[in-house]
Length: 195
Length: 195
DNA sequence: CAAAAATTCTAATCTAGATTAAAATAATGC
DNA sequence: GCATTATTTTAATCTAGATTAGAATTTTTG
Image (cartoon, rainbow over all chains, first blue to last red; front, side, top):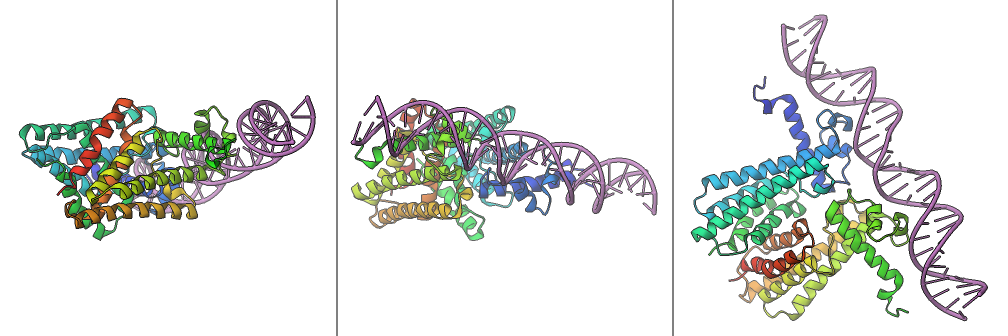
């Protein structure tokens, strides 16, 4: 009987819907996915979605919130458990790559921030900025403790984030590919950071 | 009098339209930009666009074709003029970054390939694949001649392309930022390739 | 099991924005 | 300057797909 509010019938279904929406948005683009596409993926009717979200804009917004939330967790775990800056960076990258190819994913690429309504857009932009800054702080820490090469942290951060965020463009759920990504990509991204 | 077919009144205007469309698509997303947005940017009416493209789908398609064309040129110049694999990779990255932040840009991010009609989609996917393969060949060449570290070229290629393709998400035309990107980003991306 | 609440569906509307036809204006060649 | 062609506009349609109202169904609760 679901004491945990996250496991209530409603929340579970809402969660499934967000996941389905993320799949559709990443695969067919925002304009290319109708609410019918999303609902069909769950064996529902498009109208049923309105029981969970106010409208399409909010569906996107919630997908992005979820993406941001997962990203934040990846970051926090890394900062908590890593010793040096390089270790933290490595852990964060591994965590975030795992999110992109693992089962909790897929995560919606934030391609449509501009079409969010103002309040939502501002909120998403804000958490995105937080996220970027947190990673830059990790790099700064690494430079300070000598584990990370001296570099332009803004550019380096953007470069690494770009690589990670781009994954859904070329990874389409094939398990063997997921394995290869998990194994190789973090090392490739970290390689440029070492002193 | 435009002997050169690329400088005919029509071609010039068509070109301006593609550039304006790329700006809009990158800034407001595909669904977020109406044809009115694009035309307004040029002081035209939305209906005027139909003199140049058959419909919105074709506008996107042409933007992507142009992006692919610019990418191909960046690649070809690098392969032609670079000695070692590492040199070629470096040149290509510099060239492509320049396209993303320079005046010939902006280049449309290919976020909406799935909503292209089949023939167009296949063509764009094909040239994209060509492009990826060409870069992977550069890396192979570098590994063979010892200038590039032994690595998974598929993953490495995707990582670097991701960084470059993501640029429009965080670069919004500020000149000082363009300068910083040109100066720092190529080095950051190449750093992980060196032996 | 019956009543109440939660969830989903059916069957319409409603709307932004793409598209088109025809008229108006601008450029060009002779 | 006139005739022809190229470009753009005005003023409608047309349409996919978002949205809504209310009925139907399923789940929960006591």
